[in-house]
Amino acid sequence: MLYPKHICLIGMLLGTFPQITFAQNTLTLQQAVKQAVSASPYLAAQVKQTDALHEVAPQVSSLPDPRLSVNALNLPINSFSSTQENMTQWQVGISQAIPSWGKLSLKADIADQLADIAKFNTDEVRLKLIERVKHRWWNLAYLDHALATVTKNQDLLRQLIRIAETKYKVGEGLQQDVLLAQLELSKLLDVQIQLTSSRRQEEALLNRLLHQTTHQSIQLPQDVSETLADIGSESDLFQQALHTRPLLARETSRIASMENRVLLAEEDNKPDFMLGAAYGLRSGVNPANGQNRADLLSLRISMTLPWFTQDKQDHQIDQRKAELAQAEFSYDDMKDMVLADVSKSFTAYVQAKQQTSLYKTGIIPQANQTVSSMLAAYQVNKVDFLNLVRAQITLYNYETQYWKVLAEAHQSQASLDAAIGR
Image 1 (cartoon, rainbow, N blue to C red):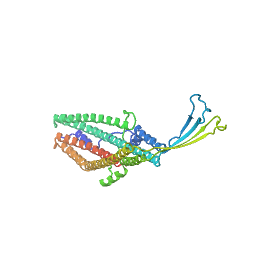
Image 2 (cartoon, rainbow, N blue to C red):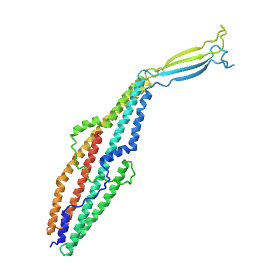
Image 3 (cartoon, helix red, strand yellow):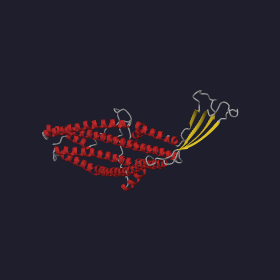
Image 4 (cartoon, rainbow, N blue to C red):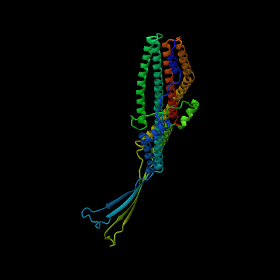
């Protein structure tokens, strides 16, 4: 026999369950990304490193500073007189080193390429930071909805316990039904404890990425995007990654830098020059003609002689060529890694998207219908309590798994964006 109290409780079970309440001040995904990018000290350090390297090219493309010299020439040590000897003079000179043609421009190009490498490395750091923020944010989103689902199912099991207790009291139910429901409720409480702990850990990790205190509370919006975009074909994504991934652009700049280093090493086979001029001041009278001694002007040009090229310059060229080959092999390795990352993220996204659609349009509606049907059958004692509880727990697992695969789909999309470099 079914009492009005049973009908009321079952009506509550078949009705809409209360939704979890979210705080008004919530952190959207876009806000989290923006804050992480603007507040990250590590990213700021990378930017400043790039700025610093951009200042190198003007330095290395300039001529070396000229040298000023002040000399005392042919000073007799017996008297230290500037008038005793005819060649005694006080000399003031200036000299300027002039590297061989092309060296300065090559050094400037290398410096610019090193700055480009730093810039692309900064872009790569930014991409990885955004990827990590999105992963943490979606982990929190999954845990929030998993906790909401746990709360909803705890309310349900409490209602089932009251139904089972009522039926047991009037002699229509079994005590084991009550104990079974209480056991399942205890299991859900344990799950809630684990999920709450996991959420606190994820919250601390996201706070770290946002550069704020790790114990600061983070609340996410109740409504999150359940729409999964069409990402195109895998081959198109491969081509896009080859053109837009900063990691590959960085290695391309490194190769260009190494090519210029080879050219610079070859320039060392050419001589460098030193130009100089000096003015010598003489004192006293020339005893030969009784006239004041004339001042002297000295001009000087010197050059390096790359004489030991087999021991020095040739080895330096071989060294630079080996470094160039290393950079080319590194690019090939990086390209393989990037394409593998794209393929891995693409496959994970497609799988998660298919699973999300399957849960949302197939499994969960069917599980809901099963629970509703079993509740109606339990109402007339055609289904035992154990199967009813199992059906409800199965529905809970499907609902939780839906949010898990949805979060994984968005995380895979974030990884795919990072792998492509967009």
